[in-house]
Image (cartoon, rainbow, N blue to C red; front, top):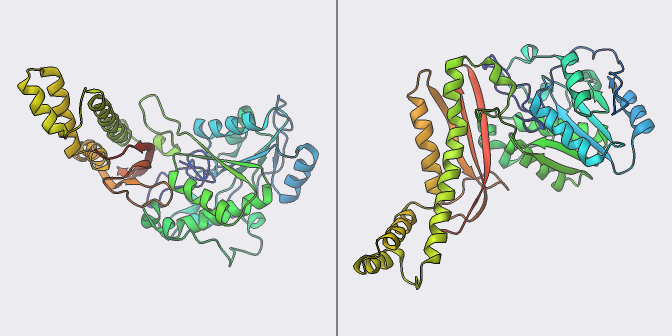
Length: 389
């Protein structure tokens, strides 16, 4: 998940990768910098090709480092809540590639108390700063900014916050009221403190990424928001710090999330292939069913089969077919042992995360959230739906 996002505290396995970056948002921060305690003392990272590799715990230290090493137009930030993994590393490498060897890449590690709701255990959130530093520096970070809560929110939690609006109340927001308000508030704060030209977030937290883009546009933040493709494990499961909490049986069931998304994508691809074949049939001007009947009378079996397939696809084409293909996989997983408990399956407009109509043409996001055992997982893939037949 993005570096900011995390599951509800009822989940004994919070996802440090959930948040604005590696999964999708200020990534989960697992570090010795606790949300209530002081950050670890500053130290210099291993010498390497992306010097300076240093840990900075205060805003003053961060600004000093930026003044020493930052170059105009080549500053990037990757926001995380720690417990870094390969998904976060991919974000950091993407940032490094964009700003170049001489650019300045800041990785933030901060467990944001504002995005933890009632019943969510902030103190139980994993903090593994030493390992995070090694991964961040190896991936190309110049500086790791790991502040305390008092450093980010001097005087206590802010009275003025950013509201996510209607998009923040859908899907993930419906499950966790107020969560996205806390995410956007800390992202805005960290954007001000790090002053980047570019900010990198993971597509895995697609709703979070959409909200951050909207905030930057609506509030005129002078920063480019860059989305990075979801990183998956070899079996297709989206990379997440939560995956470590799955038993072998739970992991087998959890694979249904990615399988469902891929099934929806494959159904869409099959529909598009049928449309292309129909368009290629000579003299096709009438309805596919009429054409099939005419071809059958002529004994053109293969062409007739093509036209019949197109006619059948037209009856269940578009968004409805994509949803049906994905839901079939999830319904089967609900009967598995252990079972998958579906939270939502949605095919939404990436602009506002509302459900798309069955005749929708254009970009869409197929998103799913479910619980396996005590672990809640999310996943999504982008799609492009053609015009309905």
